[in-house]
Length: 194
Image 1: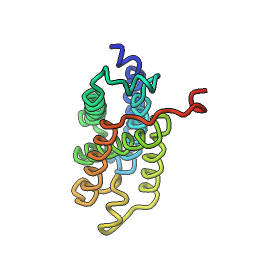
Image 2: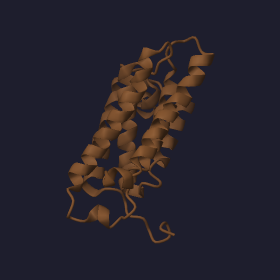
Image 3: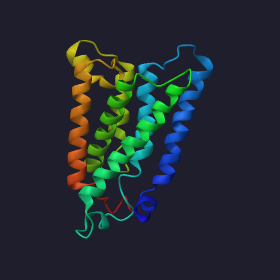
């Protein structure tokens, strides 16, 4: 419980549920499509991942590096639990007339963006880890890609059966998990602690 509270998990979980509801409500009220567009799905997943980003680092950087805790196991279970929570909230809309889907796109986008965020947390720290997913997702929504290279670069907004998009998301998820579990978030500098 102390680990969960120190990582602000209850606040992040509330933000995930709220962001999903806020993204779902306009689509439910103003659209007859039944399924949100790939752009709305990508932006919603981005919001959820940004909410989870604050949990990737604790209040004490030195404690996150002490050998007294099994950090590899904690970090792995932390990312798995974050992925599981997001994958429970988004498919809950399948029970409504307006839903986030298809499920393959939900899994691909969530795993890929969470992996990208974990990689960014290890490189830049948890406070700035959402910058890279934000830039990449906004670029993908503004400039839809075609062809193999275009589908790979704009993987968040591609159809659920796109192989290049699935490969990029899987690589980002695997690399992000590996790097974050091994090194954890980058320690804050003295100017960031002020």
